[in-house]
Each structure stands twice: as structure tokens, then as C-alpha cells.
Amino acid sequence: LNPHGSLKGPTQDFSSLMPHAELVELPDLKYGIFDIAPDVIAGQSRAFLDKP
Image (cartoon, rainbow, N blue to C red; front, side, top):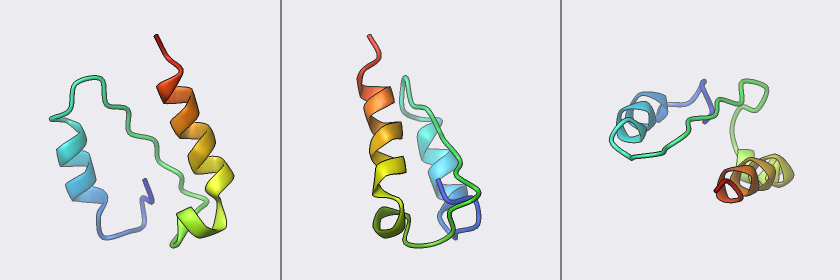
């Protein structure tokens, strides 16, 4: 989650409705996080998906 973006509130609301959801804030990344930090996004996703 980009805590500086306009989707912060809706993302927090939606994640609370999803069982087992984990909300990760990445305050050092502003906009275009999928373009500028795909390795960070992939690492966070992989860590979540690898959990039992």
C-alpha cells in the first residue's frame, strides 16, 4: 500500500473484509510502485503466498 495515495482508505476498508489479508504499507514508495519497485512488490507477494 502506498500510504500517500488516494486509495489508502478504500484499501484499508476492503482488506478488513478479506480473511487472512495482510496490509503492507510501503512509505518509501510514492506513486508507480509496480513500475519502480517490482522486486519489492514481488517479494511481499511471494512471502504472503508462501505461508502455510
